[in-house]
Length: 201
Image (cartoon, rainbow, N blue to C red):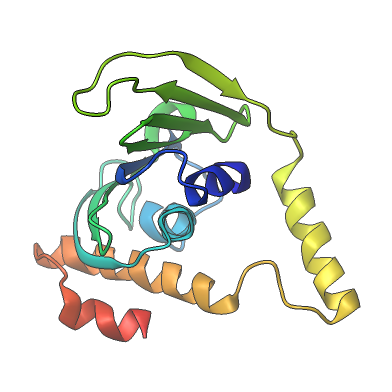
């Protein structure tokens, strides 16, 4: 994701049209206190804000409760960002195989990041006025265990007294946005600027 962010922020895709996250898999018996949204959606909301350097201005969501006894286990969310990009989240505990993928579509093509294999693939769009199939290129990424990196950088920040690798505010915003989407689904409403402004302030 850092490598993808570096390339997006350098303008490699041009204007970003859509960012789509799929975080699917079987029901984890360890989770009983929350539903799939609060457990998993904050990760993708945080990644989207980081990659787009943008904030949501409108959100809508639908949830379903199929297997989990107390909370939702299927979630689809739609987000409009202030850059014009559209975000789509597909998250569930109902898929009998684990999927962790993120795609970013823009003027010059599409990136696909696979969290499980740590592959980053670029699909070029050679025709910027229309869209046509171009070359597929696998970008070189140094593969490392994500949780080991997370803990190492957290420990380094404590030892040095430096800033944390991720701002606590970003974690809070991601969690509040996830909870807002659960609420939006329950009420069957679109969340607009009036409800998002206090979260993002």
